[in-house]
Length: 118
Image 1: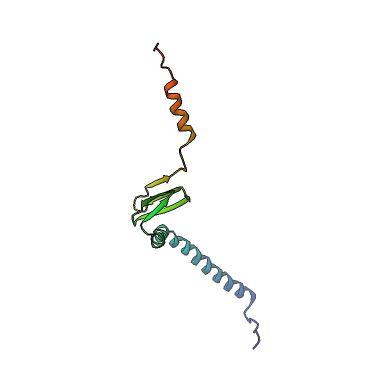
Image 2 (image 1 turned 120 degrees about the vertical axis):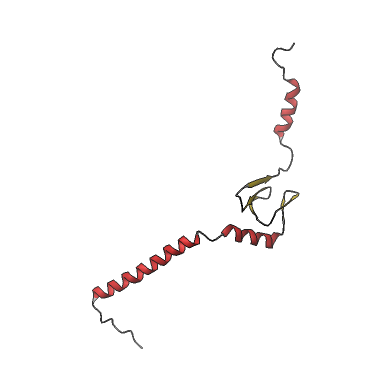
């Protein structure tokens, strides 16, 4: 079996190629338009709940995550919970220990003088 040469004139072959490419471009554009309406975050949230259940662990704490919420992990101690119905978000952060700044602020509170007092 060998390839048969196209007997149509070149102008008809080019026109046929342009029609096929036009149809492919139209299908690609329509696909992109319809893909915008697929609820990707809801699918990801469902998959997250299947894998992790109804709570997330941040540091040494566990926080409940309702089914309509999506969990976005930034690090082991930094998580954002997003309500898929309203778009509201809650950021949960934990630190490994007290910050050194907090101790310095407490020390300075006692030594500050208020203007006008003797």
